[in-house]
Length: 289
Ligand code: SF4
Ligand code: SF4
Ligand code: FES
Image 1 (spheres, protein in one colour):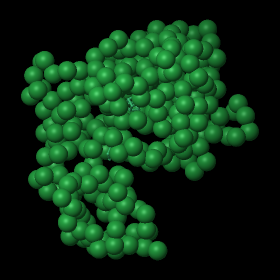
Image 2 (image 1 turned 45 degrees about the vertical axis):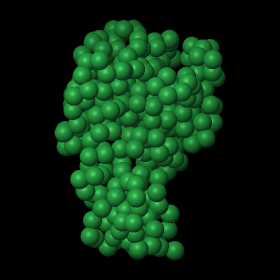
Image 3 (image 1 turned 135 degrees about the horizontal axis):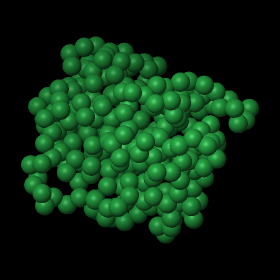
């Protein structure tokens, strides 16, 4: 079954169940998102993807609402854009968005989002980063509570349930069970939470160290696609190298088998490649393997 609707005056026909966001993407209309991800069930948490739907009193989250037959959607109205700008400003006032993707920085610029207008006394989630092992860092002053890591660790991918949201209101935060350290938690260090985090709140240790030291240079990096050799599953690996050194390993989100997921060996088990050599400039410690 398919549904026919109108988006910004253009007729669109999509399979039943397609989200408004996916239909917009099909038309080439860019809508900002944080809690949406192509491999994750949208948590409908950030509300930055709002659009207007004719006949609806309130704005509608495009990531989690399906396009319906005869729907008339408007994405670029003043009301929708005002709402997106405000969400970007509020998130930026409470959390550090400096290590978010280029896409996020592009939206902040496009919408003219100015978090500084809330003044220096705006409440923030500033806190020391949790550096508890050599593999990855949880830097929650950059967390916008989008729930993607929780879903990746839980029902969407890993089914380990090592992290969830604890606390209420502004005190809500991502936590291990009883806030124990990561090595003492149920975490299996797959790093699948890192893969979906949109803000850099979760990072591999070497990448985080280099960003702290200012030596991380994404433009100078090469990405080489290869196949993980640890077992017969054959996950695809994207090896990120800078100055001839591996600085990070990710997996393509659009791979139909793995959806960007890896296990601890594929994601972190590569420092032996550089055994005996010095660490990349700025990296304080290597990944263990
Ligand atoms: S590394 Fe894997 S197991 Fe650990 S918190 Fe992240 S998703 Fe969960
Ligand atoms: S740590 Fe990242 S993925 Fe997890 S809730 Fe915060 S911003 Fe989202
Ligand atoms: S991206 Fe739609 S609510 Fe977050």
